[in-house]
Structure formats: C-alpha cells, structure tokens
Image (cartoon, rainbow, N blue to C red; front, side, top):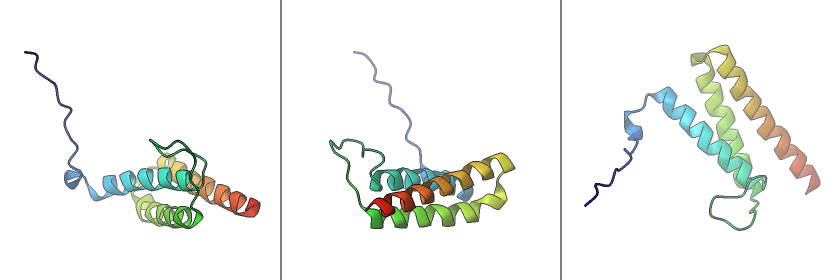
Length: 98
C-alpha cells in the first residue's frame, strides 16, 4: 500500500489581519476581472459578465488597499495602487462600450 501525501490545508484563521487583507484583495480582484468578462471563471465554458458585481468587488479592493497601504513597503503599496487603477480603468472602458 502506498501512503498518500495530503497537502496541508491553510487555516486562514491563523493569518495576521494584514495577511488576510492581502488574501482578500487577491480574491476580490480575480472576481472583478471575471465579472468584467476579461477572464473566464475557473470551470466555466463562457465568459459571464456582471458589472454590478464587478463594481462592488473593485470598490472593496480599493477600500482594503487603503486600509492596508500604511503597513506595506513602498514597492508593494505602488503595486496595489496600480492594481486598483487597472481595475477602475478597465471597468470604465467596458462600461463606455456597453
């Protein structure tokens, strides 16, 4: 019998608040791209657009970045601000086409 190796599951309750904020930013930004129709949702065959959900996700990302940025080095702060700007610009561009 071969022993199966199980990957350890991350217990997010053990993460620091700032690490959780970073995790949520990543998840919400991925959702925003998907809702804007710029990325296919994992497991989906077609692009699904939902601009209201995209707007909420982008607003939440911007809020979380604002709360987190004072605890980050400048390079990481710039990266997150750039992410927010990219999301917002793409959202406006897509809404103009709509």
